[in-house]
Length: 336
Ligand code: KG4
Ligand code: ZN
Figure (tube, rainbow, N blue to C red):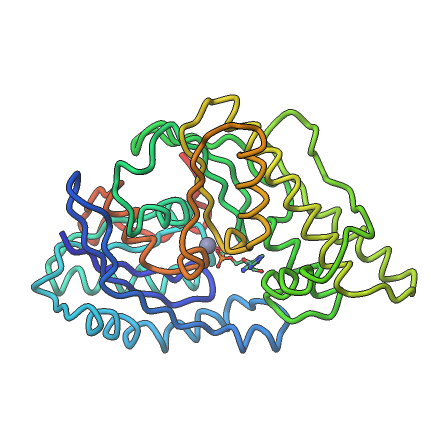
């Protein structure tokens, strides 16, 4: 089965062709094209939704054509389309959803609607044998828009355990990065600078002992602002280390708490912040130190940040193909 998937929920315009044979093999990536409008958002210090959608209008058809070309595919090879229907920015989602609806009508192929958050989880299945990832599984989705812990008992039984009450982990990194004069998105720069820093500030680890699966990261930017306002000039590297470490400690503590409570057989990471090397290494180390013997799965870095291959993968596992007139963008979509 070949799926042409499209993702436009935030600032990326992405299309991918994936191949999947259920039970037999894994999701095979035939193409994965991502056009980004990041340089424009760097100038404004963050994403302005209208600007993002205008760029996506320009990119969407060339990106789909490129994905088909790289996969040496044409409409007659494609069994189904897939598209992110939410959550996300309404203008951006509309570009992808309405374009895919037009393809569906003209090509006479069904559409599998995909929740972007499930896409981040299923990025872990790309290039892996389906049976490698054993359930129950705990998934931590950490991106610019989301911080969620999810329990996956099976492909049809996915339960949300908790999430952020305010800023997402990536958002906290981006906002503190801005206070420190770093360009958007700050996550990768903070990771780099932190390599030469230490935990000088010992910022609070919000809700670390709350006993639930909630997160709260908005206080961190206030803590950083207070230090910046003191006027002292501590090394930027130490700021970066301290902020990154505070976030990582909370993420790991809650993920391992859930893994133990639900006796999971695997842990999955997903979302842009999952590209963070320190998060991956520390989580791996703590799993080992606690002798939990739970395998950790993390997507390739390019599949952590927004892409359409992950939407194709989620469609392959969860797919319920529908007619184009039953598909609608839903910016507020969450876990069922
Ligand atoms: O998943 P994503 O591409 O978009 C959303 O769905 O939000 O995630 C983007 C977020 C940004 O906040 C960015 O700063 C963060 O992921 N990010 C990182 C790294 N790479 C991207 N954060 C920490 N370390 C990284 N290496
Ligand atoms: Zn995302």
